[in-house]
Image (tube, rainbow over all chains, first blue to last red; front, side, top):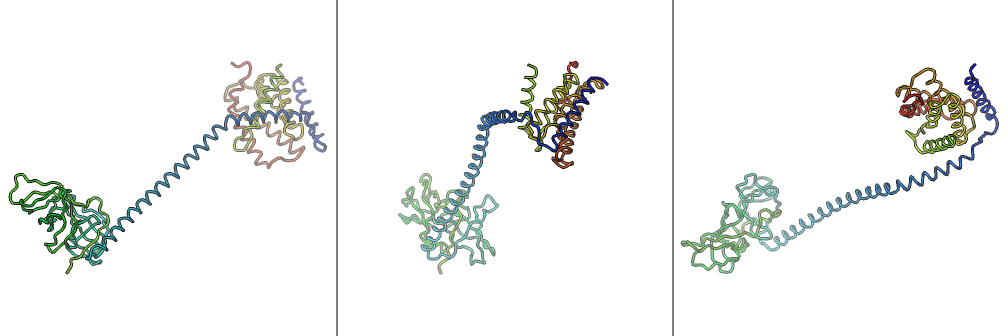
Amino acid sequence: MPKQRLLLLFFIIISLSLMTYQSNRHHLLPLKSLDHVLNGFHEIKNSLKDSITAPFKRMLLREEENSKLKAEISRLLREQQSYRETLLENNKLRELLSLKDREHGYFASARVIARDTDQWSNTLILDKGSADGITKDMTVLTDKGLAGKITEVEHSYSYLLLLSDINFSAAARVQDTRAEGVISGTGFRKCQLKYVSSEEEVKKGAVIITSGLDSLFPPGIPIGYISKVNKKDIGIFQDIEVTPFVNNNKIEYVALIKKEQ
Amino acid sequence: MIYLLWAAIIFCTLIIQGSISLFDITPNLTAVLACYAGVRGKEIKGMFLGALIGIVEDSLSGAFLGPNLLSKGLIGYLSSFVYSRFFVWTPLLGMISISVLTFIDGFIVFMSRSLFDKMPVGIGTAVFIIAMQSIANAPLGILLRPKNIQ
């Protein structure tokens, strides 16, 4: 038998004997004291590892905290936006309530639910209709002034023809000079005050109100102010441009006034 | 000097082995070291270094002396024996042999403990642990080339 195999056999026998010897007695651990050394190394290794990983761990924690805070800020901003919207709505409703106290013929308030699909007409759709007692030709106001009139009524909604529509017209007068005319829409933002005699003294900035002579709109409702007066090349009547107080794009709630009998 | 270097390497291996785990299984890096000792030296030197690794590991494990002494000594011998008598080293053979030797090492340790002390884990778990250790050690087989292969 070669020397190596003999040594191997001897090694195996020694190992097995050693284990057999220990199986019923206390364990032999000749290098147990190395345990302390190894544990010392483990401690050094752990402290080294900690000193390397600690900044990264802190960075990760900050990153996590940062993303949490960002999410919180985003939530708070959304909440704040919602509160602001509620506040604005509250103000608008408060203004409508004050309008209710001010206008004698107040009938109901309505909410604008849509704009007419036809982009050439200045019409809004209101959330109240014949079921709520809305009738054709009712005057429509906002807290700023005249918005238009009801032109068509369905069961649960109605159409508001805005002041700026080309088909709109109402008897009006200049508040300070009492000069009378007819206010008409131009199809865009501005309106036109027609049939004001050229002899009348009309100033830029003067307020236009309804006169009530058409028996359709109650008198004294603010319409707008004169933004331009053209006195050149005029005939019998003046060419007066009126800017309405009501901004069509910002109408959300309106008040409906019924005709006084 | 060479034995001091070996002692330092054994120490470092034990520190690394005690620090990492894969699926809660500690890798058997000392088996790789024993294989390396066998592959680089002759059978007797491999067996002697393997036994040294085993005796240190047994002492540090707190269990009784013998299982690792026997297993590491045996695989130190076998790794040298395999390449000097049967195979010419290739990376693939290196991977396969280290896996098989790790499996043998694990098996001997498990059997020794079960026979002379008490069964450390169930047989199924032991097989799983030994298999995982063998698979984890396989890539290291590429690095363990014998001295005469360049």
